[in-house]
Amino acid sequence: MGRPDFLVVGAGVTGLTTAVYLAERQYSVHLVADRLPTRTTSAAAGASWGPYLVNDPEMIHWSDVTLKALESLCGDPRTGVRLVSGLEVSGDAGGPPEWAKKIRDYQPCSEEELDTYRPRYETGWRYTIPLLDMPVYLDYLTRRFRAAGGTADFHRHVASFDDLLGEAGCLINCTGVGARDLVPDDSVFPVRGQLLVVENPGLEEFFQDNGYGEDLTYIFPHGSHVVLGGCATEYAESWAPAEDTARRIFERCVSIRPKLSGATVIEHRVGLRPSRKEVRLELTDLNGTPLIHNYGHGSVGVSLSWGCAETVGHLIE
Image (cartoon, rainbow, N blue to C red; front, top):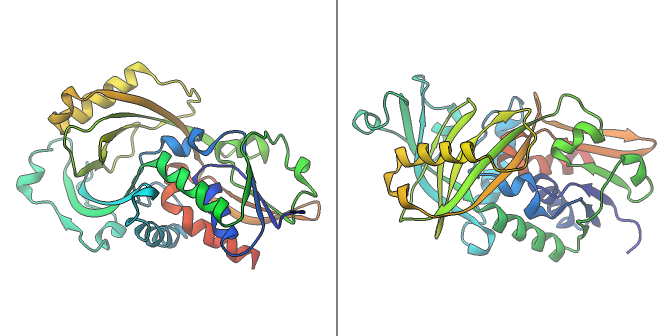
């Protein structure tokens, strides 16, 4: 094939989406990572669309672009993306974020419905958003990347960007938490997430709280199984499931939806969110080779993925 136009480092949702975006625009793209996409943090994401917990002026634009891209995939079950209606609640009496009110079927909850969730939650709203079965979605992106002519090596460890000089016309860094050591960037820190996958006892609507603490609660149905979460533990770096965390997640979710009480646990998933004060998305120079950084998305890598990939395209232009 010769030297590709772009070499993308990282096989999570940010790296895969960026690689797909470029490959489908007739660039030659090679992707390298030290693990398969289904073994990345992205595979352990919840995951629902929503521009949460990101301090960046481009956040709304990136999330809007991504919303349109995800909605276009919802008609094909092979993508792992579905439009699902449900309920979001918050302990903040101030109400929902402004972006939520712009969702086409947004509707605030009645006082009667909210009484079911008080005193823990003070406000709530209903809408329909994309939910993603992440292992299925990552497999879909991988197939789509290869169909566009992209190539990949999912078993290569990159110790330094200097080692990649000369391998492509441009390097793109989508390494998530790995950017902390690889760049290096000490403003990146891990936020550990854990969830459970259980058999679905018949739930069709999602539930999630708009929380900012360590304990998050969400219930995302995906046909035969349900994803239950979650947690957000800063600077914790263990990939091993914690039994006490799993127990608390299950108990919180059962308290919201008692039908889950007898659900069989299928698996545990753990990931380390690549958190940073703001997303780093910029073009730099590495000894004469363009190097684009695209990392630091925290818990919203999925929600910003296609918008950030578009911006990478603009930087290239």
